[in-house]
Length: 367
Picture 1 (cartoon, one colour):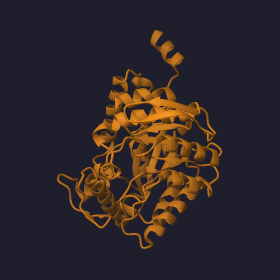
Picture 2 (cartoon, helix red, strand yellow):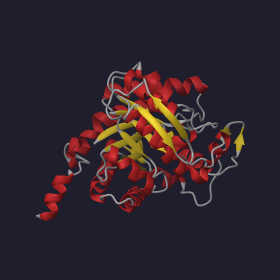
Picture 3 (tube, rainbow, N blue to C red):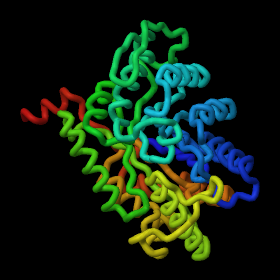
Picture 4 (cartoon, rainbow, N blue to C red):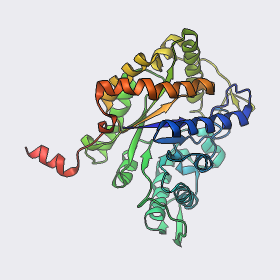
């Protein structure tokens, strides 16, 4: 199991504005590189202060120049919003710029507000995704595309820019649609799951089970499905800081859920923070986040790792515009205090999330 750093880049109340958010992201990614995190992920969202990461590929490319070993990539590219010919070349360029440190996160999107402004019909987003994926796949794997689909037609095209990794960088997917899983599984795709802030461990497990059911519906072996998960984490011994973290989790929850409709409640480009029907209490948000001292954080992580067995654990430390000083401190304590406690309970993290090979699985079944 490897650790990731998720960068949403919310501009909630940053005194430095846009420049301050960008500076925070650079500091966190550089620190993650130094601490030994495996991947730095960058979201893609548009037109609101929920996220300033309007181009995850540009963020990854810029931060490649100030890091040494950490992998970098989008989490995710909302593929239906982009020409796949351009995305294929940008992925290949990032992989060459980094000497093979690129990763690919893909998704079909969920924000109707964005789809409307890009002129894309969200009701057929998975159809569009499949057409675009086939173009992207051939461009990266073969270096040549000739394709005619329902949503795009590409004349015979050869690509001068090719990825460093073959056939392509590691692939992750946030959609649980069976058709998408079936198409991407031959390329080693890892589904990404998240419990959001709606509940504790049981919500994350339910998300895993939903994805597993889709994996099976796609005709794939559920016992061999890899899993990447994301959690919201803040380490503190202070009750005041814990309460603030809960409030920031509440703010993030309200932003995230308000973006699912076509008409947003905006002040300029800023989302208003209003209570949502049926939302958890502030106390419950504090319980849903992985929040507290290192022992409390490790205990929750051990519970979820044992139940979910992920190959990748993505950490969202700066939810709700968390001050960067507290994020960096949490990152330090996570690696120096929490990880040893987790390994004491579950063993070496390098052994977590491993799936049996096809031959091993057959042998076990016949034994």
